[in-house]
Image 1 (cartoon, each protein chain N blue to C red):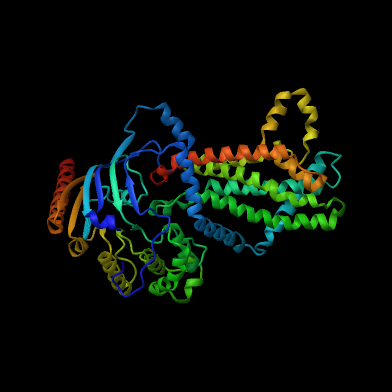
Image 2 (cartoon, chains in turn cyan, orange):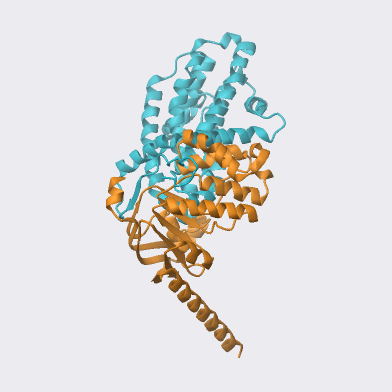
Length: 296
Length: 265
């Protein structure tokens, strides 16, 4: 192609050879399939975005990436102090119990927080280059995994040095619980990233909503501690059962703290529901995506 | 490629219209959209940035789009690049499209120049292996020395512009969309970039160039189109269209001056 002495320039991959627009709107199934194709064809872009995010997060602090290890530990200390003041009798080995829930929650909350602004913060490039915007919330969710993985270092340190009698092979099941959590987080992130383009209040609202969500989930307490509540208010029990983080936290508690197998049925159900939610979130995102360049 | 040769055009646009909603614009909050729902029928809710725009760019043609500010020139490029969906009409762009809209748009201030080149390539959808092969050439053309491994935030404006230009022109597209990119950097780099633009224009099958520089229009384009308020006013030989544009903007200026004078009087 090039008529110059330089080597031929690369051709864009994943960019259609031909752009034809005839005003027809693709159906919902087609849109969801397109969303998955977008993700697959631009996995390299997602990877670069994750690497960039991780580089930045560590670069401007004195301790750098050590914060990924310290952060959940300090948060654990805060909750232990807080709960010990509020209630006299806490569970045995309570720090470990809390830590098993803080770690996955930090992944979820930081992914959702980052994803909320992920599209809006790339305003300039969205107006200049045509690319699938769905990789932006995807990258936020994936870089949360790396954070989560670093948090496993202090977790295993706790198990091996402080709570050796609670260390058991069941803790190796963490990835099995992390999978449905990832799918759920991705669905939620894609949805809020799309919504935030149109309503910038989403971020403000989410900060409080996430905090409330955490306290309403069995993270700092176990579900059976709410037994008295569900006896008097059965509706509340139903509501709590709908919370995906009931299953997620109980499963992490089971394999890390109680050293028993998790509720497989509950996890399978969560995975199924999360996949449906992911399809719906992608559908929503693909529907509103064409408007991004105009609204931003 | 054989189909492209059989068909003589690179871009075919028929009855294009792009409508903007005034209800959902920049930084709406729930509060604002709630108020708008209450006052549903007050004021205009939409405006057309482009309407009834039809044109064709055949192979070997380079089309200059000129017109006053707010005529819809940039919107037209965004539609051709696939960034904005048209509200009505048919668009057919044949071949690989590259848009040199504002340069360095996707730069991440915290990352090094090298990382930013790879990131930009990924945004543009260029295969990463080819991008890595092309890396040294891009760095050399941008001519920013050892700064290439420093964060972009330490770059001067000129260095940023040079790097942006160098990345954006690393692809040889079939259809090239240019938006006012021609006056970047210092004198030496401007000369170098003009050579590169000439090469790209020679290699591409069709070019659409948006500019305010009338010299570029007559120098590089063999066809011109005058847009005003989203409509095509004139189309044809660059020299003719430039003349019409200059006459019309002169008249508009005089009319404005006259109305100001009338108000003052």
